[in-house]
Length: 169
Ligand SMILES: [Fe+2]
Image (cartoon, rainbow, N blue to C red; front, top):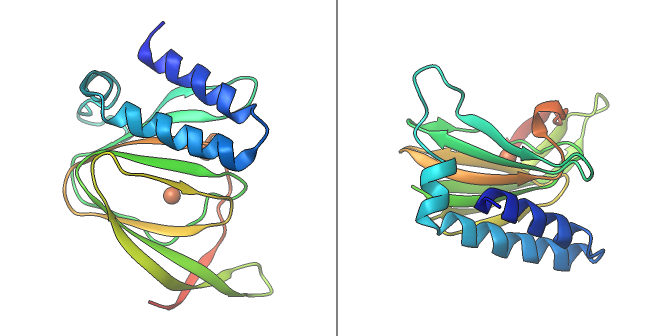
């Protein structure tokens, strides 16, 4: 088996443990181990060709729906505050740094737009892993090249994210 397939099997087993927190902690450890492996990073988080998407779905589980994705940014990538709709996600920093902020929802407009206020900021360095539960609003700020591994509860290509409006930075 490839190291990617091994990772997928281990994530699948963790998700089936039933205890959500225990499962997520286990997946965070698995992701942390993966992004610290030179072979894994070289094979699955390689430089993108010209015109190639920064995002690559490396594995999608037919049974449970989770995805393992590689994101490789050659330049700055500044993300505005967002959630992942009905999905959770785990970010694993493989190379470079991400300045991440988290936001709390302070109110909701009648059209469903969520009003958010910044609650914390931190820097994710190589080997760092973070779990973002369903509905957690966050914003990544990357000024230099970055490689990261992201495990998604569902393929985020198919997820509708909330409309977000910042009221307090
Ligand atoms: Fe995100």
